[in-house]
Image (tube, rainbow, N blue to C red; front, side):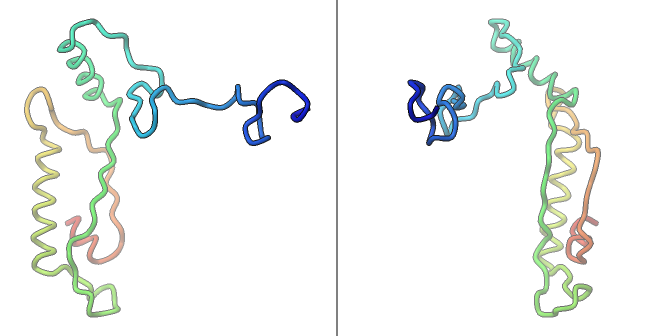
Amino acid sequence: DKTTGTEEWYYNLFPKRQLYEPRVPYPLWDNDWDHRKPISTGDANLDREHQRDVRKRGVTKHLILIRHGQYDETDKNDEKRILTALGRHQAEMTGKRLARMIAGVNEKFGPCNVTKIRVSNLTRAKETAD
């Protein structure tokens, strides 16, 4: 019974022994949250190289969200809500930045493997993606 037993309960819902307690206090991030981090070799540079290799082989996934550029809001019809000159410039600069990311910075930080691109069917989004 919850009320007569000696075990403590969490808000009378479940025993406190079942309460999850994170290894790292909030708001810090636990880099080994899935308990799959390899044991350190003792050499920080070698460990760092190993982590880069793991990321390069595709274990890490990146999701990049891009909002459309500035657009003309004066019309209610979507086909007429096209990018402004500034919006086209924003889209061009975003495209150049993505191209650099995809190409890679150098040998250590090689190309990014893009597998999918999703685009909204709104005119301004399609313009930005083009």
